[in-house]
Image (tube, rainbow, N blue to C red):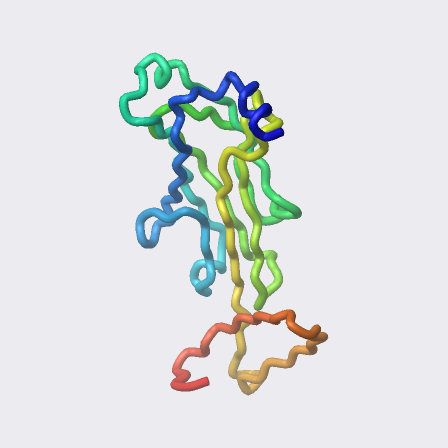
Length: 177
């Protein structure tokens, strides 16, 4: 049972309250994940600083904080390695810990949503699964151009109750859609 599993995970201190994630995105400061959708964001690769910190309960012992250190294995879901690069491991300790993630949207299919996650696994506690997840959402908009008379030709095979989202860059000077 889940209770018995948690009972036997002795290497996780009881004083640990949460693992906090923030992404320095270079636009608005910090966010909880990586989100790229504007044409200027998807024309070349971008690097993001990921800050991960272990937060302890109020009035936790200093020894628990000082002795806390975990080796975290970083993985990317599905075929995300095609456009997401991150280190294989990093050390999690109290305070600020960071690593860099590179997202290269230049080879992705245009017009659709690409969603993956970077997740961290404690190598000493593989049974508990990911201890954190960082969502990565990239939408490379399809561009319509003057030489095609701003016409977009696309064939669709639609299914009932399944939405089809397609993203297009608004042409310069457009006043209505």
